[in-house]
Length: 347
Image (cartoon, rainbow, N blue to C red; front, side, top):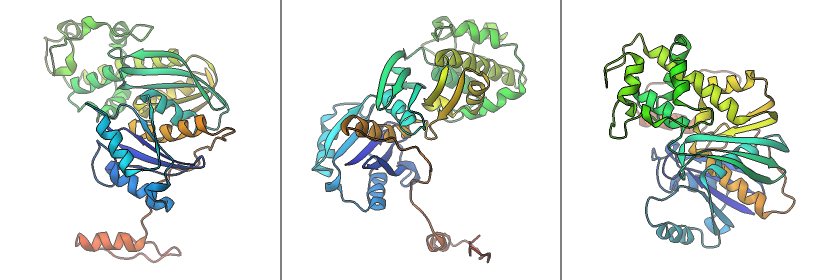
């Protein structure tokens, strides 16, 4: 069975190809065409080329939502034309995240936690995973989103939301805990956000309200002083870690996916909590990873006795040898030289 998985079609589009349950290729569209939205045509073509297959050999196209902002029939018709012998399967966004984590993990049983900014109106979900089954235990809905809060702080501190959250993460390591109680007040123990700290009409400064600025000791909408930024980052990071640890619960095996789990300090906190014996992080934790999840979930639900394939390598895209590298350097009219070694590698 040949399954083409597509995910992140509104952001970080990607394709993955599964052949008889084995992941043979997975590529983000932006790595080939610099496009991040829509059908990842270049990634699809390259996945098929690497597997030496034609579109007519694809048995199933599995799409992880959300994948359209308007009528979806045109997209379905386009895929049917492109893959005439394939069945079209649609997967909910967080199920795609969950499948990408569990079905590439080494575990036969696990709890799966998925968290991101938002996808199909959800911002998180927890699953019980056994064998080839994923059973939903709980969901969290936007706008009560930890990803939304972290993005708001990213913008508040002068960075770009949905891009620079890693800067807030590392900035937090040099701050103190003076604002941890404030962010603990914003985020309840059930992971709900207190709406009084946000202003829905404000598109700048993270969308925070006058009440929030007052608690920081600043005028409404004021630019955050450089001296305060690390402590604000520390406050949101601390509460993120506390909340996610509580959301995950306890057990033996935990699998995680979703954009929030690109946060390395959060993963460290989960490991240090001592609540889990083993933790597996899906390397492609963001939206692009749902392409892998869509393909794997379809395989496990349609193939009796399907076996899991632990993700042993991340080298699932195009390979570039010396000749390809040399051609790019020459096309760019760059000076270069060979460094002779036992591998004859080029610098």
